[in-house]
Image (cartoon, rainbow, N blue to C red; front, side, top):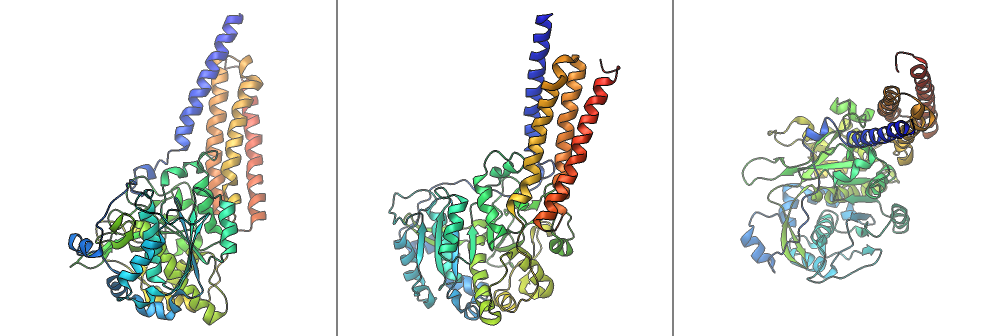
Length: 491
């Protein structure tokens, strides 16, 4: 008798463990988007480039210089309208704080003949501490230098702050943003694989916490270059996810085939302002496009001159363009643009569609173009006079509440089934209770989360709505357990 009870208990523990493992895989598996094209960061390698710009141009003759970039995207008039970003501060959230002031000066020296404003004195701050690195710098310095140098090309008089996200918490970054009066943020390395924490909130929360800064600051990040799906990143509707275009030598500008794109199916309902334009029920990215594909841009690093490309370039140059519009808006309207950059851009598109250019259609679907890439002067001018009402982003903590609490409910349902009655029940009845409670908790988690994300209201109303949704579930699960326990056919 004792052995039989132990055998049943062992079976239940094994069965429950397998069930939990299976559901964990399911919870971290996006049924639609796992097979839908999307983006993640490319393999991080440490490239070594030629020692001089002249050699780079011989090896990669089509690589864009600041002058060619400005001509291609009609940038000069936009810079003049935005006073070259004077008085603005752009923040760069990087994988690490590797940065070389020497390389930054060399880049400006090389191209100041093409664009004299590059020699403008600007303050570059690296946090938590500045490091002037040499040849043996870490692998991400090429990324950081590309972000800083090319944001400087777009807004040459804006101050620049580099945040080492590997050494700073979200709270520390938030404090530094206030201290240095950062007006817009860019994050260029977005690994979509870390966002499984949305379905499993107890892991990998650091980068998600950083991305949640989009709830309170203009925030631009690349969609990624191929690889895994982008849907988890689209859980942050206030972040502007930047896809890519390429500039062929002969053909018109077109969407870059290797950009990340996709829809957050079952995870995030598109805000009303997005649905009114895209007509997609689920949030879909990219939101906008800019330079990402061939022929790339020229970047100076301690590792040499490098041709750089990828959607990670789109985030910082869009952030810099936003700073031009923000500067003009302050001058014209006496106040900065809304902190919700994504909503602002969608509403701007609706009011001034000519501020964006749709690239020539290619093999990618329409959803891969977003609003398009910027008509630089037009978008700065239109941002400068924009008067549409844009509400700040909703609280990150509140938006994640349904997922966190649903997991707690899921765990409690398992414990209730195991410790409350299962050990005293027959094997068949115990298995039914554990399975039903687990599956029901999972289904309710998805339903509640979807409904809560659809509620566009203030935090208090969202909280109240969530708890009113949870109460029927708790009642239902207890009634179900009681029914199973008292039904004689489940023996």
